[in-house]
Image (cartoon, helix red, strand yellow):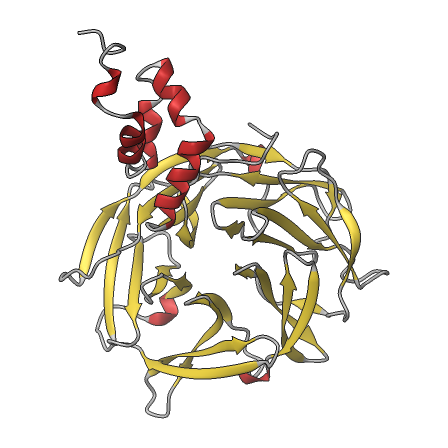
Amino acid sequence: MNRAKNSDSIPIDLILEILSRLPSKSVGRFHCVSKLWRSMLSSPYFKDLYLTRSSSRPRLLFAVDKVGEELHFYSSPQPQIPYEKSSLVVSADYHTTLSEEQSGSISHTPLHCFSLICFRGKGRSGEDAMPLICNPITGQYAELPKVIMHNTSEAFLGFDPVDKQFKILVDHHPYFPPRDRHIILTLGVPKLGWRSDIVCPKHYSYYWSKGICISGNIYYVALEKNILVIVCFDVRYEEFKVIEAECFNRKTPTLINYKGKLGGINWEYGDSGAIELRMWVLHDVDKKEWSKYVYPFPENDVIKPQEFTVAGMTTRGEFVLFLLDTFKRFYVLYFNAEKNTLRSVEIQGFGENVSSVKVFVDHVEDFNFLKGESS
């Protein structure tokens, strides 16, 4: 049978609709079916359709660093429906590998936002660094314009959901004049270049968090006269706001996306001696209104909170914790604070010689990349 003559048997729109619901690895294989399929799957229409579908099924992204080797990216589904078992075993899907030359040192945590990963880049203090943006699902990457980044400099990756643009914010001179100047780079424009006209209204002596982007705002913790504050940067309008955070009592919180709002969490010992997860949620940026929540950690004989660190919160409202010790079997925990339940998922497939694992919540598979940039 001539398939070309029979192409009307299944409408192309229906084919694309079906393919948009498949894992990214399966879609990648279908590129090899024919030139027609490669063209269909590379079209802007399908890429946007796939992004829409994948946004409703976010994944956990794993950046796995191995001793003397490259940086490997894996992912696994986040549980979207309740399940009965308190423990599961999941095999992570491998996606791509970056060499040490490409990724540079990852002593600084890679910056994750939506579908992209940003690395601090190559170069030592005082030298030209070369930040790198990567789509860990497709393996595409782009080296950005060189910029001097000191050891104390921090970079923050943000996404403007209105104009659909990614931007990188860097505190350029944390200890040298002009201290209030930040530089910024807008990704996906015809001519990439750093701008130095971004002024923060106050100078901070130290940055205490890797930052997080929520609904078009970058948040990070800073220290102002020995008092913790939250710095909020509007990605679209490129404006700063400073929010007092004395509620954290000088204990640096882990910042998470709590149902579309900024949350900061810490582990504390309660009056009874039991470990509690304490969280403050910022309900109004302008009014600087915070609410406090305290959740006791479920009693168990195996899992100790101090052995895990918090990656974030899923769209279903579960805290995601991951094991710090990479010499043991690697676990991710899902803590439902409202129901006081704890579920463990053993992640397999990373191989041997793992020196560190970084876990990112709500990663979205996206076949789009920066305009005009490719690997």
